[in-house]
Length: 73
Image (cartoon, rainbow, N blue to C red; front, side, top):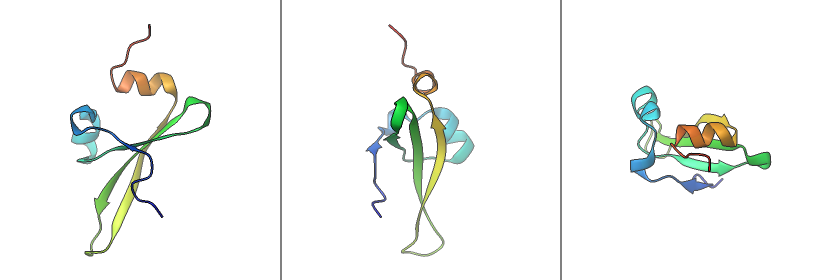
């Protein structure tokens, strides 16, 4: 029901892969059990009242850190 479920990711932090491959202009992160992450974007549908959520990735913590450029300490 809540299309903005999760945490929005700043536009400057959206991986270029998502921008070039999918044309992403917004990205949200949902923390899942066992340190997994779901990444999704919202797009307009064919009508004025239709909004579609596309799940782009469900990845583990290590892959998430690599995709966003975080390093292990």
